[in-house]
Image 1 (spheres, rainbow, N blue to C red):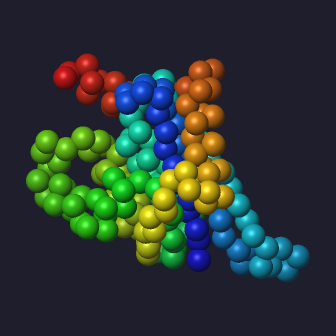
Image 2 (image 1 turned 120 degrees about the horizontal axis):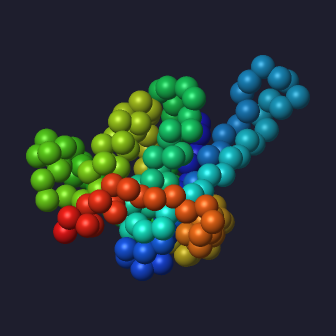
Image 3 (image 1 turned 60 degrees about the vertical axis):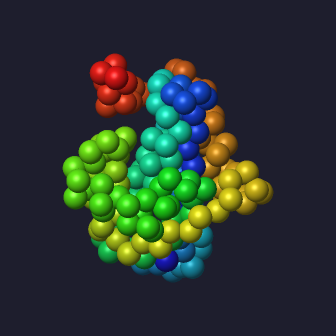
Length: 165
């Protein structure tokens, strides 16, 4: 079983943003010395102009894309009702059928569903900023990345779309 903890942040909406992701699992490889030990990896990244919802989505995407094997059992813990409800309540599948007409973040939803469908995923909503240690750590990673101007990436899809509006 793999656990994936995620969070996104932005300062302003839109504004500088970041995501934080933690992947955790017990080692099941060939080396008996590590058998049953907890393996944990952290991922984060920041963008010069984006939104909180885009960063919440990207946090989940980055975690799922980091998995090397297909058909893994994964529990995703997120404080994003936007992400959890869209999948659990199957809204996103209706959006796909309608070509995402009138919906934001089409690029990230398509990317998420593509990688999501490769695994057996359970979604769990956790209340944000309520003291859950791994959710708090993801928030710290996301906020730190959102402030790291030297390493900001460009959310080119968002910036192009916002120029059209």
